[in-house]
Image (tube, rainbow, N blue to C red; front, side, top):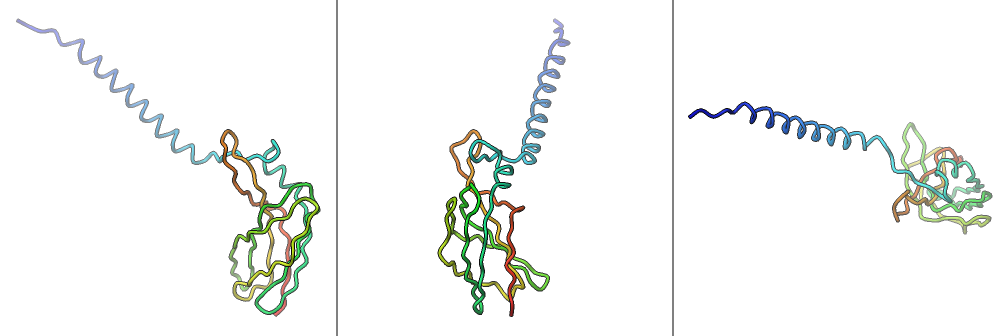
Length: 153
């Protein structure tokens, strides 16, 4: 008795090709997902547009290893926090400071301890946005709106 096995091989080959194509598609999808950032919005608009409306003034007085800052929000967007960049001697470091400013408001004097002996500090405002499609808020740093405070030693 002879069995005809010609039909088994093409079916197995087709199933294997479909599985291989699905696995490759999943790998490409997961790899490409890393290039697409989450869309974060504030007031229903992308945060890069809202960052253009952030406007603030800063007054800084250095007293040794501390800078006393007073910040006034002149824009129409509340500022959530600040990233402060310490620049000096070819080095720089950034720290986040937890003090915000409401629209039209001002901060009390904020004492910022200096890192090393920087020649200047740059204040970058952070706004709080909502991740599109999720119930999660994330802070976004507005890097185009930095204000420089020059220091003297």
